[in-house]
Length: 229
Image (cartoon, rainbow, N blue to C red; front, side):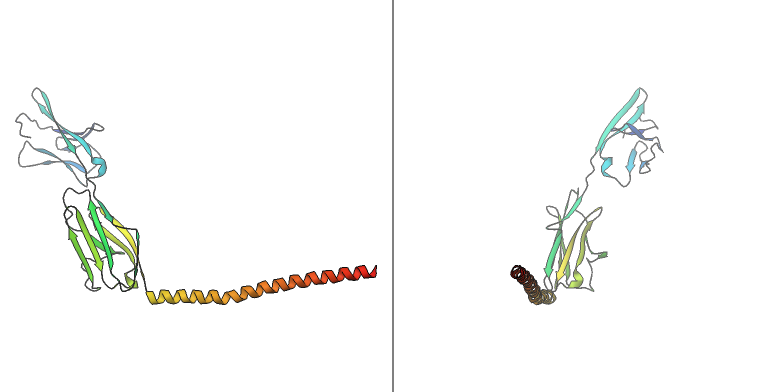
């Protein structure tokens, strides 16, 4: 504000509820995120909002007293909330020895995200040289896009993978199946099923035999009764 008529008691108001945020250098709200910052120019009264949130979106008003009344200046604060999304399903199944490939896109940003970090469970893996075979490629046009590739996947690579860019993140679950072990378990299950079939048949045959034997005994008893009478 370069108006020479500006007094010292500049007031900032949030228009959606007409709540006085600051008056002069004093903060009038219990929300400590709001404050006035003075620059080198004595006519500048800057409203500062720390840790901006979605609810801060809206119209703000600066009231400046003059000799004849007051001047009112309004500014609209547009809060952009970024959103990270890992493309595809929330679960990824791969075979041992194959390559894990995940793509994360960041939408809703005013400017491209400077850094996009990938986490395996709780560990950041962008620069994991111990594991090796990990590569992250980030592009910023037309939107931020970060691709994670992990070569020669093993069972130890299973778990949660999170793409994080500042206040937003997205997570998927990755399952790495070891082919030989999986096939062995499937073969074992088939063998057990085959072994169980004869037992079921044996029980069925035994039940039929006992039922038939009981029926024959009843018929013989009835015949003896008729012969006796």
